[in-house]
Length: 37
Image 1 (cartoon, rainbow, N blue to C red):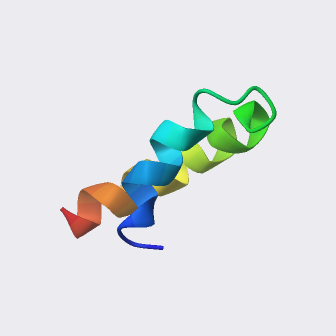
Image 2 (cartoon, rainbow, N blue to C red):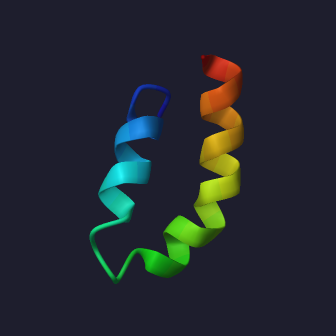
């Protein structure tokens, strides 16, 4: 889930069902995406 990290963040924004997950995954995904870049 390295290249999908960026796509997952953008895909989790539009859907309201993933709102709670996107909020909790935001800090985790953002931290991983920053280290990968």
